[in-house]
Image (cartoon, rainbow over all chains, first blue to last red; front, side):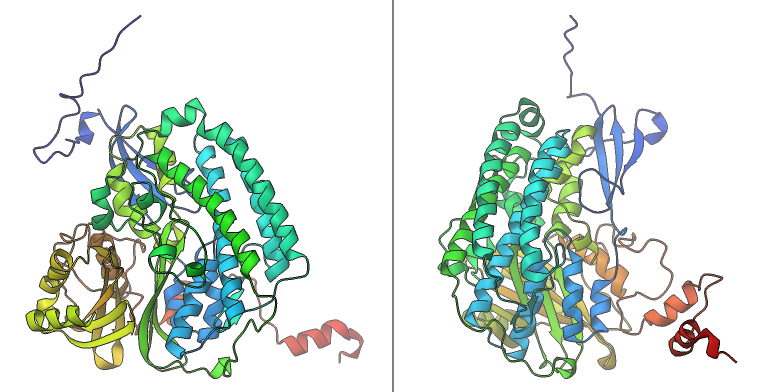
Length: 392
Length: 177
């Protein structure tokens, strides 16, 4: 048996500043593209890689395949016309867009939202989180060749989508949280059906735990992959599970409670090893916590009461001059809307701050260096990247 | 929040303090003081997290407003620094050495608003719009309708009917003539 000991001190050669010496003309390197149909993401994005053997020497991200100009479109629409538009920015969990947009408008216009609507909003946000995590597990397992786990979890996600369909009429885009409240009350028997689904989720998540987290291949490929040092959290603007897996308990739900999160009992889930495996584990536990939160919400949600405030004529609605920033915790981290009003019927500027903006560009380009080319998809999945929120 | 504002006011002549919520406030700072004010807030006041950098085009007043929103992760205070740069000379100092993530925001602002950040890594490379030759599209004077009419053309063979006339002909063909 050949015992090959690699000597990484000499090769690849490095520049004095620590970067790799890349000379494409030497024929020792290959310049390849991964994407835009990339296995590591929901959406389209490219990685321009320079590899040597099967190791990534340099990575450059390219976005722009999904730019639909939402921020510009919103400047030409009245506030209520923006409401069905914002959810389309993010496919797997549109409700966070609806919540941030509606709350920003309410804050600028000075509208008080009824108590029941706040509970219903909290419920839909947690349901969206559950659905998004379940979809993420499909991607995470699929990028490492375990497609069957994706089928289990997407099957469960479909249950949550069924409940969304019952509540809002839409499976993917719900257009449920509108400025002033929500569109509808809970249907009869909704609580029981949702509780049944939660039981199923917990049952299948046990199987996922057994099949994925104790799987030798999954462990071998994800332990140590994409290590994020806790000291990078602030310079790179890392939030959400990526920060929590590094032991930094950043969770907007706890740090700056919005809606009804201050009345719910939970602690942010954290990890300590900060690699792809820990991030997956943090997401698994966060999903189970979300299931628990939904149960708490269903117990506390008031039976009676208004679910929408009295609004002025929304087609001639002039929002007072001002600006605000509203944020919420989505599955990837801090999701925020910066809204500027000039006192007219149209928003002056709306800027969407998606967590992937920092995770998928600056951080990804740093983490990809030295990774095996087969693991780049797993690395992107572990950062939970959604290109639509980079481009808006 | 008021203490923070007073400190910044004495050191960097910030003005127009607007508290929005208990933990969110906006203030205006002069262009020449911006980077030192941000550095002070980051190093001495604990505002280590850059939430976003974005711009607002005030076309009628002839300036861009650039907003730097930063956060203190320990007490959750959020501070928005607003700086105004003239539209005819849209140049701003880069803050990429304070936050690594800032380079991406600055690259996008260069592309979408045409605000230059000299020295910011990759600021001249296209970010989202590859091969764009028109004026930066997020400026208020960019006419989306005119652009689409000039760039795209109707597919040959497609005609537009007057709905009323068309339905009349379709439903009651015998009444024709």
